[in-house]
Image (cartoon, rainbow, N blue to C red):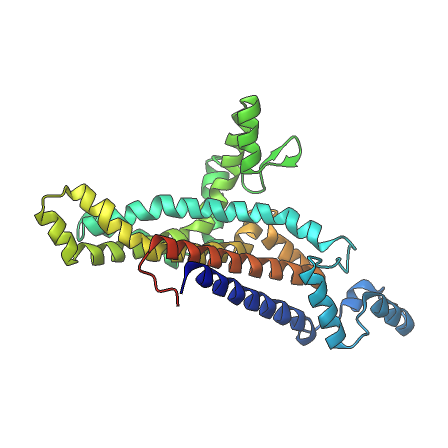
Length: 335
């Protein structure tokens, strides 16, 4: 199978998964308790007024008609309008999405920068203090709940020592400050303070969200390196006199990174959808916070839109990872 057919197959599979997500998300509204009309209508609303509201929202039509209309709207890129506020779901969701993606990417950077060197050191210094320290860190990182770690970081580093802000996103002249904004201000105005402000606000949420990821990749890197260092081709390279540094990092680590790339991609998708708790702890105005607010208000249009965007993001990340995996590993069997 050629690379083009492999990529086409992955895209078609991704479309089927997205269709399944849309269908499940749509049906969830009918299997969960609560009626959107109840949250919109006044407490003393008459049955006639409730029926009028249901008709305006299109909720009195057959389910299959609502499903096909909803599916058509989503395929056209229209996620609907909020039952509660009447605002466009697209506008609210895509205003929050970059904030969540930035947090997920920052957590991934934290994980990659820390975990791979730790895994390599742990594997090359097996049964030494460095190995014990790295394995203990990975065990603690995997075992620590995100919400507890976030609260402890705030209490110790923010409240006790005042090193970081306790919550919220960095802002510049009243507007949310993303990484690209900080870089643009530095490039155009030479202002370093916006970047420092951005860094101080994102550090604790990124550590909180990325700790489990860091521990997981550390363990994978350690086990992968140990497996590669024990193979015969490594012994052959050493027998030929190749420097140990080149043997470890150019050959053993390169082969170890192939499965780690897959995990990185899968975990990036998980981070985008799993940042709900971290965003709640740090009052981070991302997609997770929007999901919680929408659930509390039973705003089904917003809930459905958020879940679909998270599902599509997860599928896209997996397609990119599969493509990158096939590119990095020429021996991959496309079928």
